Image (cartoon, rainbow, N blue to C red; front, side, top):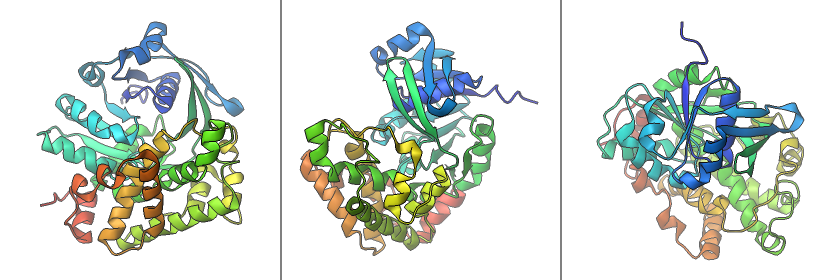
Length: 371
């Protein structure tokens, strides 16, 4: 029987999340390679041979020794059993194109998270580039860690989520993914399908809305306040609730019973409350997390085009009113002086613009290719 620690992981991306995941996997005893496209960004990690990890409340901590640190995609993927993609979803296209020539039979690629449509986009790019290896592409519903980088070779965990759905494309292969990941991450559970994980995308609701509705405060204080504590007021929580209802309704139009934000907070953190405002403030893992220092932040330039746009586009395609989402998207377009409706994950870009609900369901559940 294979030693459960023999799985070899490659983490693509050395930002907050990538450093945290690489260090934690190494501390758990797995062989870990860390990849970042910019050598200078990982020079200190490579020189030291690993990453210092700290945690609040006595969580995982210590020095995680890495097997390799590289900026060569071929080297990064050569010995990997599981490829953990931990980059902003706006970089998924670039990663898919760079990785496609090096992927081989039996490898599992997991997007952390896929946001909305991540696995669909990655799979389409891989197929368009002629990828023929038996590779499983999967995505998580959210990132398992609440974490921050605390130096060039340091990371800190605020909280590890208790349950994180994951789904493969097609869903029939999800059990294979869960079996391989379980020794490291028993927190991962069956996410049903990539439509479920994509439409249960809480970052789409929380991140851009809180950032944009706190825009003045972020610019005047450079983010010197607690994002989920000070940044969530009763009025802002009501806006979050409206967007959340729209998301759940879009999911229902595809035959999916999506979790509400309240249900997600209880699933991921064991947190409850009388309303969303109270439930957010009852989530102790949010305390200490500062707001973005600037509006030029992934909470807008990633979460709007890669999360809100595809959800809203699905709503428009299937007759759901998404006026709240459209308002947030348009506000982001104004502030960033760009057209996120055009630059985002449109249904054409995902290859699903002209397909019925039944065709799309057959594709994500059983792998029946779209015409």
